[in-house]
Length: 230
Image 1: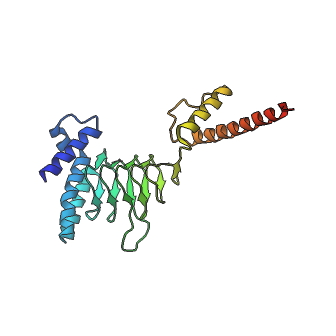
Image 2: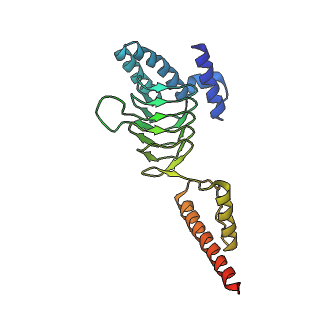
Image 3: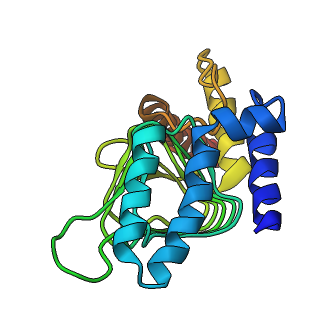
C-alpha cells in the first residue's frame, strides 16, 4: 500500500507542473485523493462489501467532484488532472499510465447487465469534456481530444476529435507532409501556421486540397513530358 501511495504521488509530480510539495498534493489534489480512495473502495467491492464501497465512493464524490464506481478496474499510475465532473462507470477498465482531465465520462449505453463501459488500454490520454460511451476499446497510446464523443473502437496510437469522434489519420508519414508543404509554398500559401500534426478539421480539409493539387501537378508534368517527345 505504501508503494502504491508513493507511485501515485510521483505521477502527480511527473504530469502536473503545478505540484510543488507532497503535503500540498495530499491535501489539495482531488484527483490524487479520488484515485487513492478508489483503490480502497475497489478492495471493499472485491470483498463483497458492496454497500460500504458505494457509500465510501459517494463520500469521495461529495468531497472531490469525481465519481468512480468501486467496481471499475484501474491500472497503475493513473492520473486525474483537476477532476471536477469526471464519471467512471462500473465496468470501466483502465490500463497503466493513463491520464484524464475534468468533465470526462466513461459511460454506458445500455441498461443491460454485463460489460457496458469502455476499456482504455495503456498510455491513453483523454482531454477535458470528452465522452467515451459503451463497451468499446480505446487502443494503447490513443489520444482523445477535448469534448469529443466516442462511441466506436479507437485503434492504438490514433488521435480522435469531433462529435461524433473520428480518427485523425496522418497519411504516409513525413513524405506526405513534405509534399503538402512543398505544394503550399509553390502556390504561395503557408499551410502550417500550427503544428503539422494538429488534429484540426479545417487543416485536414486543406491537406486534402493540397494532396489533390499535388496529384494534378504530377499529371500535368507527365502530360508536358509526353508532348515534348517527338
